[in-house]
Image (tube, rainbow, N blue to C red):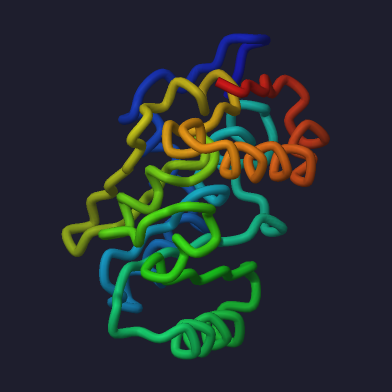
Length: 195
C-alpha cells in the first residue's frame, strides 16, 4: 500500500476502509463491543502499528502486537479489569490482549490529573502517533479518534503530545519509551522528534 516514500492512504475514510476490510481487526472490535465496557476502544499501538504495517507493505495485522483495549469505568476495579483481561486471553488466545481501565492509568504518567474519559486519556499518551483509538458502534459504523490528526502516523513521525511536552519528568518518560521500544527495527523510516 505504499509507493516508495509516498503512501496511498491519504485520508480518514481510506484508513477506516482498511480497518473494515481486515478480518482480525473486525473480530477484535466485535469482541470489544460485545464486552459492553463503558467508553471502550481499541487503542494506541494496536491501531498505530496496523497503519504503519499497511504503509510498509507488511501484513497489516501482526498477531505479535498487543491488542490494546481501553475503557473508562470508575465502578470496575483493577482486580476486575485483570479478571476480564484473563477471560479474553482464555476465550481468544490468538490475540495478545492488554486491557486497561483509564480511570487508573494517569498514575503511570508523572504529574497527571485523573482522566475524565478514554478520549482524554488517549490525548495524553506519550506520542502523538500513539494517541489514536478505534471502535465499532452498534450500527456497524467505525469511529476513529485521533486528537492530533493522522499526519504523524501517515508520515512515520514520532513526536510527544502537548501533555508530555509541558513537563520535564514526562519528557524523560517519553525518551525512555523511545529507546526501549525499538520501533526502528520494524519501521526503518521512522522520524523521531522531541518537539
